[in-house]
Amino acid sequence: MKLSIENITYSINSKLIVDGIDLGVEEGAFVGLVGPNGCGKSTLLKNIYKVYTPDEGKVYIDGKDLSQLSSRDTALEMSVMQQENVVEFDMTVYDMVMLGRFAHQKMFGNDMSAERKIVADAIEEVGLTGYEQRSFLSLSGGEKQRTLVARALVQQAQLIILDEPTNHLDIGYQYQIMTILKNQGLTVFSSIHDLNIASCYCDKIVLMKAGRIVDIGTPWEVLTPQKVKDLFGVDCQITTNEATGRPNIVFAPADSVAWR
Image (cartoon, rainbow, N blue to C red; front, side, top):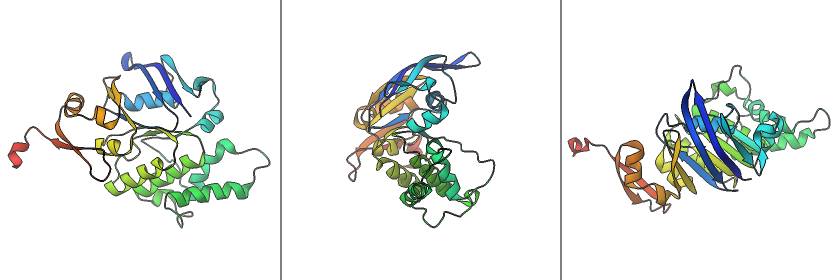
């Protein structure tokens, strides 16, 4: 499932937020979107998953123009985990995950035993077996995120769009959720705020600043001290993570001499 973004431009109150983005995400690739707060990452993603309508440009999945697809057909092509998931009324974990099957539901004729197995398998995949009847709102932050990952998985779309899926989670849950997603072998495009997580899991990383893409490449190509400094204004050292063979970023704040 290939994602193609062509000349996406978007403004809010006449202020240009996303400026002519062209980008391709190859089938099966795990691609991270990295940049400082306010650079337009979430706005770009919302233009992709149709919360916003671009001023200019198109988004295609395997050549299909997403703007021409219904909500149901879009859900069959792409699943989404947003940064903010507001739940206005409570439901069980099982029912929350089952919501991901709506695009596959028919008015008549669904094999509910098959539907229940798909949901049960996803709940097991994210490590929440036994939580099916728990109230979603009673869960911890990490448990809620794993529930939402399960909901995305049961859509059985081959493309997943993620807006900082590990935001506000402790380090254990961050790596657990990213490992679950990586192991699916799907096409993934995700904004990521932690550079070491991006380095660990991404095949390619897209650097974004002031509404534009400034670089694209493998973790070793784009996570260099100079590029990190240009993007975030922070000095760093790059070492090799012995466990992964990927770059490991060690930050060095300007006043770090005071801690020596």
